[in-house]
Length: 104
DNA sequence: ACGTTGACGGATT
DNA sequence: TAATCCGCCAACG
Image 1 (tube, rainbow, N blue to C red):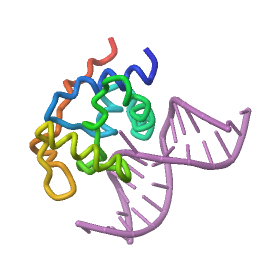
Image 2: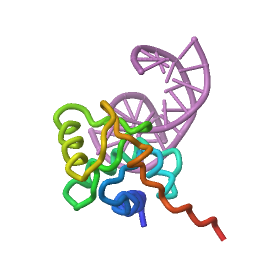
Image 3: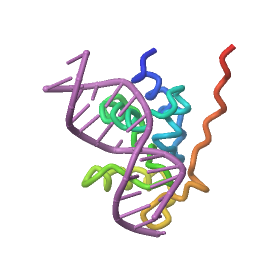
Image 4: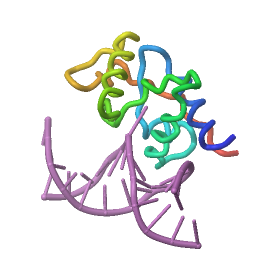
């Protein structure tokens, strides 16, 4: 499995109505510190059925600029994600990935 | 091999 | 709360 697959797998595990962050996805995928690369991988995941809209910036704000950002918000609201102003209520909608297994 | 890019993040001011 | 700064690193040309 390469980096791209690791990220896609993790993002696909985010349940409907919940969201995560670039940093958290990177960690859950076993690639801590690569938040920016998660965004890169997500950009090319749009056509593969990956719920890219469920990944937000730290603190729950949409970082995708322009029209795409509005689309993301719309998709999330349709999934039942609650927003508090411009950011999503991470308290309620933040997904918690199961802890990763230690190397053995 | 190498400099640039960017849907980041957190620490600081 | 917001603006800046800076470390991060895979992908690209």
